[in-house]
Length: 152
Image (tube, rainbow, N blue to C red; front, side):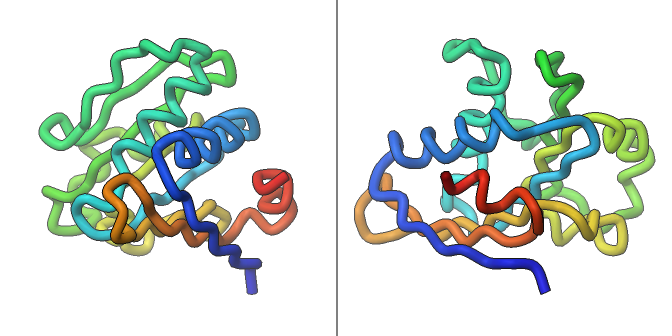
């Protein structure tokens, strides 16, 4: 069973710091599955990862809520940010270029819509809002050999 770690992120800077550490570890073929309810901070976290991975803190990272996927050329390779909220299930993944995207880095919001296409080796990050406005709890699991490097 993959290791699981829970972290309390008291503010946006803590969330962005975790995202920056993750960005430094990403490589082609990685999948990061972002879970949690509406308003938990999935898009904010993905945006922070992409900005850190690009080396551009001002990188425009629109939410893919309506386009379903946004792609980025990063120093580590192609990255694809999926928001599957509007999908009923995995049937539409082929039209979104899922197989090709998996050759690069994928960040997926609402990964439960992937069904059987959810990569077993993915890093799963479940975000939950805490009472303070920008605080959240993050539960990380997967990445057997790399999870501890993310926490260092």
